[in-house]
Amino acid sequence: TIIRNKSINYLRNHKKYHPDLEAIEDWEQHLTVQSTDQYTQKQLKAKIQETLDHLPPKCREIFMMNRQKGLKYKDIASTLGISVKTVEAQMAKALKAFHDNLGEFIMLLLAFFMKIFF
Image (tube, rainbow, N blue to C red; front, side, top):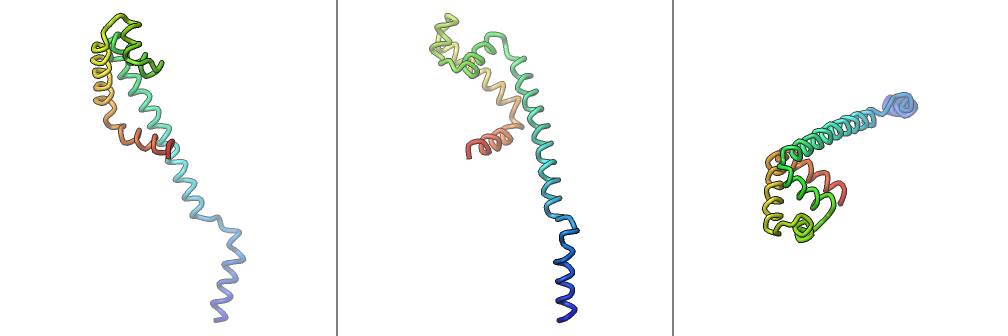
């Protein structure tokens, strides 16, 4: 019992001199996740820009009017002098291109939005 108590006392007294290994591991893991997130974010931005660059000009314009400016299909159609059906078809084409090119990032995007909203 004496040895046990002396051992416990020694560990308590010298604990402050030893770094908390668990805290260091958590910190290292946080840095790794943060670095991975930044790398993935750069990859995602590059992939989005690449997809935009490969869209036909009119399709890109319609997509940007809807997604960036927030215009409704009807407003886009009247602004460009085309039918709403044409806007719908061009948006479907753009969204398919994004789906095809960003398939590998879908789960990352889901995780990102879950982090923001929940």
